[in-house]
Length: 194
Length: 47
Image (tube, rainbow over all chains, first blue to last red):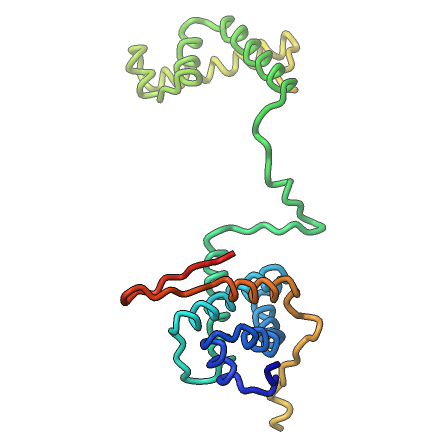
């Protein structure tokens, strides 16, 4: 049994020589100070746990690889590692927008499932068909502009080129097409929503 | 006066790492081996 009163530097030296128990003493000796330090910066128990673990993984690897230079207190070195990991965490978090659920904010109000269910798909298809039928009722010049714009995704410049009229005329035809559609929908009392 | 301006940071005793974390670190250390090959050091994890 190793004396718990051994200095950090003696424990490190013995650990490097292969005495694994020394690491346990070192971790247990400094765990609370380190954990409090990390928690004071992050304020989140789970993340603190992660950073604490990553800190000691770095410590273990450095010691085992023989890259540790004893130039000061062991605990200061460990705290410096933890501090750098905390900075990494905040840098990463800055890049990734974070949402946290609370009483006033529910994450599921932001996340939406955009895939439609069977019923919604049926309704959507029905609405699409109704709209197509309504478009058929429009005068040809208006119908043409509307189809080019909404179904073929052409710009008004492209539409004017294809139809041989000016951009302003195309815009005017589109305006009348929409006014007429609204008027037909209203007259026929058609509902195009769920 | 010094007392007024230097607040001693208190450690919160309830804030401690989980025992699983400590055990993981101890086991990680035991499983981590370093093999020296010529001038290179290779890390080996033995589970």
